[in-house]
Structures are given as C-alpha cells and as structure tokens.
Amino acid sequence: MNEQLIYATLGEEGFTQLAAAFYRRVKEDDLIGPMYPQEDWSGAEQRLRDFFLFRFGADQRYLLKRGHPRLRARHLPFEIGQAEAQRWVSLMTEAADETIADPQIRAELLEFFAQVADFLRNKPE
Ligand code: HEM
Image (cartoon, rainbow, N blue to C red; front, side):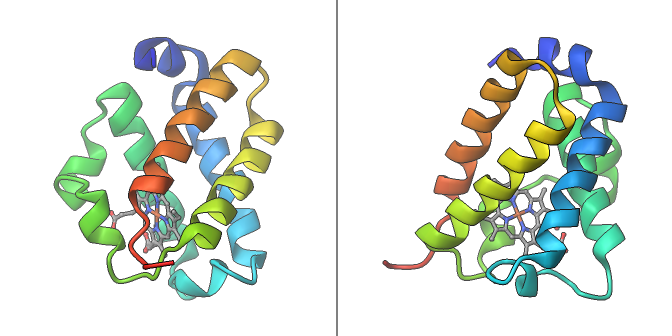
C-alpha cells in the first residue's frame, strides 16, 4: 500500500469526508450502530478521521489526543464477529464509493480496511 500517494491524493479534506460519510451510515445501522457512543457521534467521527490522518499522513493529532492506536485492545469491549466486521467494511465501501473518485486509491484503502476489520474480530463464531 502506498500511504504517501493515498495521502497526497485524498489529503485531510478527503479523509474528513470519508469519515463523515461512514458515520452517516453507522448512525443508521441496526447491527453496529448501537455499539457506538450515541451521545458522542462527532467525537467518534473525529477519532476515526484523526486515525486516518495519522496512519496515512503521519499527522500527530491522533497520537497527542489518544496515544498509540492499539486498535485490537480498543475494540475488545465490542463483540466483533464476522457479521459485524463485514458490516463495517460494507458501510465503509459505500462511504468510499461516495467520496473517493480514484478507483485505484479506493481499492487499496478498502483492502487495508478489510484486513484490519478481520484482525479486530474477537468473538468465537
Ligand atoms: C470490524 C468491525 C468494527 C467495529 C464493529 C468497530 C466498532 C468501533 C466502535 C464501537 C468504536 C468506539 C467509537 C468511539 O468512541 O470512537 C470504534 C472506535 C474506533 N475504531 Fe472501530 N470498529 C471496527 C473496525 C475498525 C477498523 C477496520 C478500523 C481502522 C481501519 C477502526 C478504527 C477505529 C478507531 C481509530 C477508533 C477510535 C479508537 C479510539 O481512539 O478510542 N475500527 N470502533
């Protein structure tokens, strides 16, 4: 995955739009929507956005606010099986279709998201 090219193409604005389009869908989702903090949607959206900027653009905001991502540990409080991981990826795919024009960049990002989502599964099926 070419992080630098992805960041150069999307920029902060592109990742901000991606996170916003994703959370518009998560809010309405019957399976994973209820797992999220219902009183802090904008905070959750910002955490994901900042994580993207950190992972792809080495932007320090996420680290300063949240420390090292430790994504697996941070997802342990939520029961994530195959269905939940698939739903996350499917909502993110819709968000990427809506906000990312370049098909190559979209495909690389979605491949990365699918791998991380699989790695975050923590529920015996
Ligand atoms: C596999 C399905 C997934 C589910 C059900 C899930 C669910 C959640 C939930 C409920 C939260 C708490 C929201 C908050 O307060 O911030 C969260 C946080 C977060 N998720 Fe996921 N997530 C999934 C996959 C992913 C993937 C694939 C990524 C990255 C590519 C990711 C990145 C994050 C980040 C960065 C946070 C904020 C962590 C923090 O700083 O506290 N998640 N996720």
